[in-house]
Length: 111
Image (cartoon, rainbow, N blue to C red; front, top):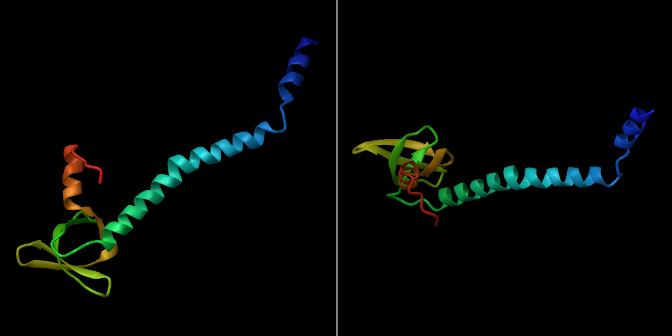
């Protein structure tokens, strides 16, 4: 007799709690997953657009070099060692070399 009372009491929940919990889960997902990823994508796009000759960069493949020439067709000439050049796409740029070195050393500076 008492067992059926507890089962019935546990099954009755308010109709407004489910939408509030779902909304809370969506907010948590947005603030911890979507927002940081879009912020990083914006920073990457700005960095690629603001590149200049002489900047030291790292590609997605991990190739370090200095920009020698920016072409109009979306490519650039990367000097990997003195006298050695590679033509690569701008979209393959990962980060600025100095930012990578500082990040590894734990000296990352916010701009």
